[in-house]
Image (cartoon, rainbow, N blue to C red):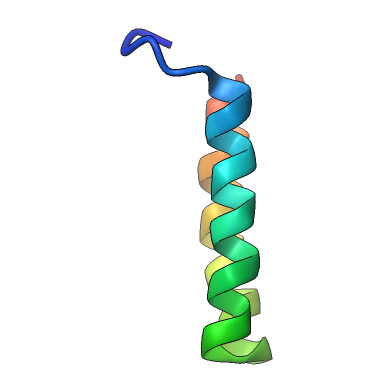
Amino acid sequence: NSLGVPIGATVQSIQAIKEAAAALVGPAAGRELGVYLDYISSGLGN
């Protein structure tokens, strides 16, 4: 939060990006991308 951006809203945004990207690239690529976006989200939650 050193940039003054709320972490909760950032994590929600990453999850929204994950859903939108999966719809664009297809299920298999969406699952693979989801792994990376989930990793980023979990790192922000700490």
